Image (cartoon, rainbow, N blue to C red; front, top):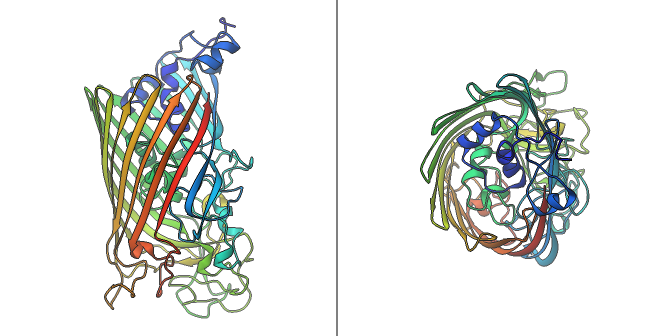
Length: 518
């Protein structure tokens, strides 16, 4: 078995770390490793596979994956469903009772992936990756879109857990791409890929994007540059280059999907709307460096026609309100006559143009790793509106659209910090703190207690503490707790009108579990 050619472990470090939710190596180092020549070292036996971190590689093709599941308790939760992949550690606007539950994907997303890296010319490699997330408790593909559609038409008190995300039931709901790589000229890939903000978040978050213990991992607003659906970009080109201690990245998303059917007039019909051919583009830029034990990253992302899918409480999917609307707030411009598309298995989206700038740092000091970061996000009403029938992640269609949701630009700011302490070579203790705030972007009357809506200024905070112990390189166990709360406009469930407050403005979530990764 030793005669089989194995790829160098360092070449897999970045992909495995990011796919498993574990801390990534320095981005520049991982880019250099991606172009390094293969090494004959690898798994020699089944025993070595289970006791070391040797990769499962054959002729440049590597299989990797993880299975992560646990149990927890939440002070204000909801019934689970098999499509949710994030658990319930972060407070939910509809959470209304305490409960014990099966907690999926606490430190990392359960799933499988295949990575290809094969030399075709001296120093040049063909690279490809296909990976997907699977819910460990149900066996379903990770599909946050379905958590909304299955709640459509139900009273709020009867909801199961729902949310929004880039994983929407696709066969490869994480990434699927191909390209070329060399140590001298960098790596260029094309396909469905993680946004540059997602890469940076995983590398500079003290909790490494753990759903149960990281707000910025659970909620992709920061990684996606304003909306969680944009943590992964379809039909995107991505380029990375490392030069000494400095590394650079650029990413561009080409227009794709359908823009739907749109009209500025009230009482419009399918015959009088303007079809939008496709979604707009997106751009990302990244610049980072390592100096000794200090690493820093600067990421800019611009996403046009970004979609935020909102809770089914908001209306148009409900069989009791069989209308569709576009341009302005719900039902401002309803269509007349027959619906443009069926109401079942569709979503309701708020559309904005987003621009985000993130800065993050990491410093190693003995057994401690210190983390910190900040992101500034600006959201505006889209310069090119989407219409009814526009496509969202996973090919889901929007049966209702709001293109004029913002009274004025919405400014979201996110700060985070934390420390990871290596108690010994097998155990880490991580303490993290996350803070989000938004401005007051509503029109008069002035926001005040009793007169809040979600366009009023507000804050969200989460703090978490957890222990992770590794029995082997493959198997670890963990235990921890997260507490989150909201105030002001961020404690309001509906993004227009008078608003519906959260049932509860806080959530406590202790969790234990185990993970097997390869």
